[in-house]
Amino acid sequence: MIFVLFLGLIILGIPIAVSLGISGIFIIITKHLGISVLSPNFYSDIAKFPLLAIPFFILAGKIMEKIGMAEKIVALAALLGKYIDRSLSIIAVIAGMFWAAVSGSGPADTAALSSIFVPGMKKSGYPKPFSAALIAAAGSLGIIIPPSIALIIYADITNSSVAALFAAGIIPGIVVGLFLIITSYFVSKRFKISEKIEKVKDKSSHKGAIWALVAPFIILGGIYAGIFTPTESAVVAVVYGFFVGTVVYRNLTWKLLYEILVDSLLNSSMIMVIVAFAGIMSWAASTVGTMDAITRFFISSVHSKLEMIAMINILLLFAGMFLDAISIFYIFLPIFIPIMGQFGFNPIWFGILMVVNLAIGQITPPLGVNLFVASKIARVSVEDISRYELFFIVAAVLALTVLIFVPEIALIIPKIFHLSA
Image (tube, rainbow, N blue to C red):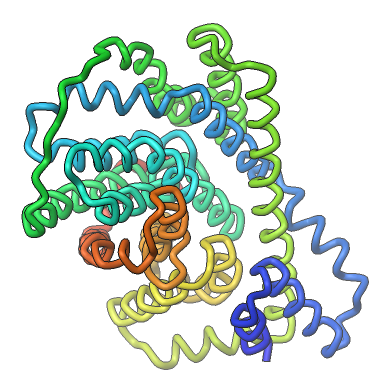
């Protein structure tokens, strides 16, 4: 009943957070669990130190976007890549990797990159739908490459190490990025897209890009060196962005700062409301035994690790078409955590597989969130974007398959830095 109610509300167009809350409260009332549990559950789900990193990383990403760090990375990449065939499509994905190491959000990456690349790629001969599809795919790297908001949520629910998950996401993010680069090259060849790169007129436009390039190393390097925690690193990122905007670039005005704070507040509030209501639904479903029953069904139906991973991945790919990453974590992780223990799955590796799945969901029709962000900014229909996006979805699924069969891709950096789950 709880899942039927939830899906019914989603189909009716009710916001995900509200649908989660109504479903959870419905179970609490009908099963007489006591309405008084709502307040402590609501509070305990969001009053956690690791979750403080989310609003700070959102704020840091907004500051670095608004002061023009993304544009300077693109200008530098264009200057260095003008002699490479199909260089703009390659640069777009590389820029997506760099920006992912700043913002931690797929839709935020897509929005930041679309406004820069779509007009530029159109001038260079790329069709708008292709450019938008590529940027949406590159933007999905935002939840794989650290600092990732999705990985912070996963760590909180599974009591895993945020630092270990951040370390584990680096190489898989690069692997997915490489698959996207190769795909963009051959798809542009297949559709006979001829690139016409103009000479860079303002050769000084990339000056200051070094400040954007070192940002990920400051944020992540401090974590792995043991100088500060992931939550503290988010605060460091905000201070760094503020310093660059006021002292180096000198373009962070009071008006711009106000806009950044408002945007960050709205985005953070949206995430935290989803976290709170998803936590209530998850608690209610677990209390009445729904999650245990589903877990027993999974374990009794599947007997090999490969079959279980295949079933989980298919389920997540399907769920990612309709739900956001945070909701999926709270709905499915209570089911998957016992399965991880039963089949001996490494929780760090499993977390990376989940976020790669959810990244694919962000670009999968009909409701992939990155598709709608790119569609709005590029002013092309989701249907037109989807024609090209299917190629990038296949590429990402192939990358996911590699990660399934070669777990060391995700685990090698955590092992180097002696980071455990």
